[in-house]
Length: 281
Ligand SMILES: C[S@@+](CC[C@H](N)C(=O)[O-])C[C@H]1O[C@@H](n2cnc3c(N)ncnc32)[C@H](O)[C@@H]1O
Image 1: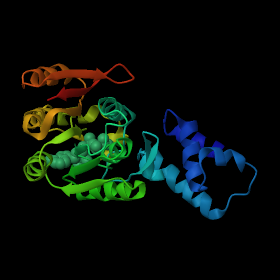
Image 2: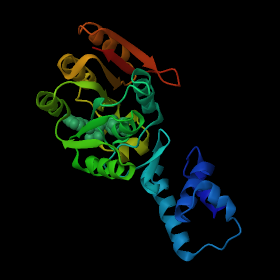
Image 3: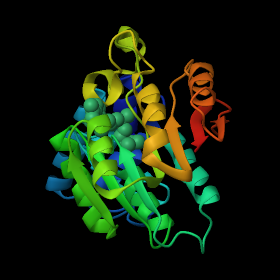
């Protein structure tokens, strides 16, 4: 079955056909990749063949593997995902690293944070668990996405309160109601709609448009809005961390530096790409 799956995915032009075949067959057999190799000589049931075939056909249509197997790892934990929630990306883990540096172990009790555009909840849930004793609000406009965030919050037992609404409006409301935060994080939509055709089919045809695209002609809409709100929304010394798209970094840095922030820098991800704006109030 592995050989057939790999051949099928190769013919469909998928780059990592061997790995993908292993993931999809393992999913059909309800084992992890290691478990797959431990049962190489066990007979395969008809229902397992059906499930593997379904997954392969979906993958052949370029549906993201994470949607087919129903989960993706983020910062060492499994997050359930499916249509309606962006698949968590490894580069977003930089936000968690930076937050952990800013709030080292022993200094996290009572930290209050908010995640604007939470999607699967990967950032809010991870941060609430990594910063021991902290609690997070998580905002999204998409009810579907919040459904995934709720499952992940409940599975991991993280102290995260979910809010449905517009990110910037809800952020202002929460600050007005409960006071400024220690930490604001966001991986907002930052793709220009005109760049749609440049996206991989997995992204363009399957992930939610609301999660991908910035308002037409205004890729900086979110980072600008968050910088503007950081003065009132953060406690003195508080931190804003925003993921950036390519080409946004110099504009985001200039806007942050001009905002009266105590410090502003753009950090690179593991691939050396300028990726996260860090603004300290
Ligand atoms: C790029 S995704 C990030 C999801 C998740 N934080 C992650 O890193 O995987 C952006 C998220 O912002 C949400 N979003 C888009 N427009 C919004 C708005 N006006 N108010 C609140 N959330 C919004 C989308 O539904 C999506 O979940």
